Image (cartoon, chains in turn brown, cyan):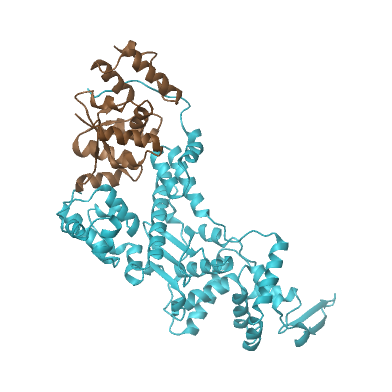
Length: 162
Length: 419
């Protein structure tokens, strides 16, 4: 399953330097639209993402079909460029969307209302555990690091989800 | 509508041609070879979203128009401007300023609609006058309508220090951007950009105020034209004369000027009359006529007048002449004292501690406020809010700080995986 990855997920995994997990959670194939990459302002995080692309953990995708461009400009009236690119790919190509922005009422409303398949950072970590690419302990360590950056998760330990 | 690559290419070519650009110009903008641009227009090479947005930004068109059911680029005021002004395509600074301004105006219009503050029902009056047949008629029309506008807006005879605010109160966006010296300003008028005035931020504060009034005059008289640029070289055109006359009278109303000079004891042409009535209805009239020489208008009177009404020394001189308060010889003589006038004005300015009349960034602040409100109402996403902030050069960390109160205090994520 192809997944259009939004900025927040890339930043979360870049911060903990585990973008490699995107390659080890089949059946998902992660893609980052150019607009999403352009939204990463922190140079270190951007460098980490570029290295992950070079290593083949995910790839960069461009929107270039007229139908997708029409969707993109229409979404971009009220959403950011990265979000709009992800939605255009979701709607145009039937891809899933990787995103974490649950704090944003508009974004939450759009992605929950249009029947998009969604995966988020905790979901990627859980899928990685299930795929044997990550231990529960390592996942909990990542959880702790992300929570220090105000990204809270609803559960105490990944152990409770297995 | 789903359109194919051929139709998309055709529409891009139409926009390019309307704006007077060559395929090489667009290829240079996108950093691609010219043959690739030829292929895009022919529908044989795809255009990426990044390239599309770059073209939209640089050429000042709404990308949504490209995908509309009916493609009617001719109605766009920026297109009108590009087609009517041969320099638009070659003058990079001008074309950048207009495109940037149009992006902001369109964003403003969209946000107004989203927050329910659509100002399409609030707009300045339209004066559908017979086109002036002579300079005299143009001046008369400008004078009459300026007086009428002062009355309609209940402005009395006082100076208009907050003219941009007054004009914005009429539903007009007022902006300032650096333009070429020979351009004082321009206006745009269509549904997407709204009614918009742009003045040259490189000009003096007094000149900007005059340009603001001048462009407002164009909006009142020439709105049907959708867009015009006011250039120094075209000041002899009748609609430019009319807009100049309007601006001069709006900023320096005859009654206000005469009152000012009266207070300064410089009412040479006016009899000063006082009448006292007694209980039997008889009046006693006292009359004094100002002697010409001791009361003649001096350069410092003109500086003070210009300072009071917020116009330039030269504008004030021309206005005094048009009101026949000074002769052409006096105007020339006073004009030759410009250096003393400038020094005197600097002194006056320093002592008054007065703020600039044209405040920078009002429009930008209003746009930011609208964007924050749209975010608070859940009409735009945080990423869109940041994007708008970036066009206004507000860094994302500041946008985050401004918007924090509109957000839920704490949220937590559970794992989401597609079923």
